[in-house]
Image (cartoon, rainbow, N blue to C red; front, side):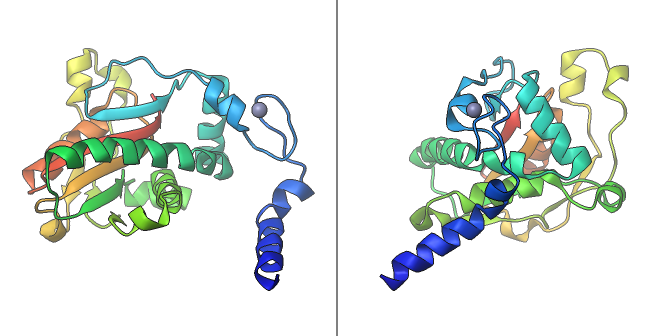
Length: 228
Ligand SMILES: [Zn+2]
């Protein structure tokens, strides 16, 4: 009885903000959700023109996706990003199970795409880390122990040059050389790394991080993002 009351109270407190501010679904305006399951499931999947090791869940041009990503980045409204946590976690587990079937890994690391110190000072947070945290929170208890979220392995040392100046797709995919630096290679040997970001446009950032991780002893690496 006591446990049930405790559960109900914690449930009410967790959802208090939604009740108080009468949150409405961005899609269908139903109360109590920022984005309901039906509306999430109606967002189109992106076009498949990324390398096979980069997975993106939704089409970035969809207005709801655009709103959630820009609200997070520029208005610090992260609840939208967290809405995708369960969906990203379930995709991640599916993809990892395929990798595990083929190989044994010493450990599995979840690595948010880093932002530079300069950008961190301006923005105060890294949205990729917020997404990575929400993925880990949504991995079921038995599996969670196998995953380690690490944000001290690779550092962003250079902000990118405007993409508009780079024309061909191949060039864009390879553009950010010198952008990252591995700062903590010790735990990488034999691992499987999952690189997390909010959006991938050309795949260039994830491609470059993956290249560096593989060169530092990682056995395999793939990227997972909300949008493409
Ligand atoms: Zn809805």
